[in-house]
Length: 310
Image (cartoon, rainbow, N blue to C red; front, side, top):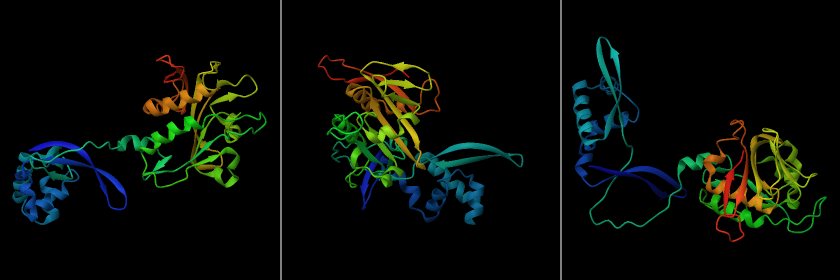
């Protein structure tokens, strides 16, 4: 009897996850113990009709139908579609599952949080093959740049890094640079820029290229070239994903705000509402640029919630 499906974490030099069906009755797998039965089942990793399988294996089709009936009864395969062929109906079948495990009644379980592979794909190219595939750039805490500003966004970067770390093995370190440490060769890869153009000099280099940018000449308001709106709240933040102008195969993620509260709001949105972030701007879904506003919902003076305003 098929009980459930879960993701199994395995280690053989790398960490991988695979869907596995948990079984309590070993007789479920009995049809697979036959050499021919296993060959038939393997071919059903993709939809096939029994006649096709019989022809490819060089056996009589009734022998294939025998195993197909056994597989159906055990819940190992299902009918996918039908086709009209030579005046008859051809049924196509495919395996429901590709990996199995047997469980005795006294197995003890421990809780394990496994990252969703779907969300991992959403984070590409910044995360690839279980590793951070980008350099995180934060502003220097020392006075620097035309505004002689001190960046205070590094603490927000900790929340961002903790979130991204759930999708990586944590083996590639260090993953960050201060903006004053970044050299020209570092600018050609995937980048994560935290902080606006007055505190992060790498953000300053691309600020005007962003669909949503910070107007450093006018009280640091956030300006959208998409909606033509300007956002003046200190808790307004922006999230942009753009093509790296120095390398069309790389991407740049910018998380910044008018003030520190806005940067925090942008990172909260990324961590808690990633799926919505990647829906694109509400005025043009093809543009990966969002504007958020942060709120202090529990009244402790710290931004803890972010809502999308664009």
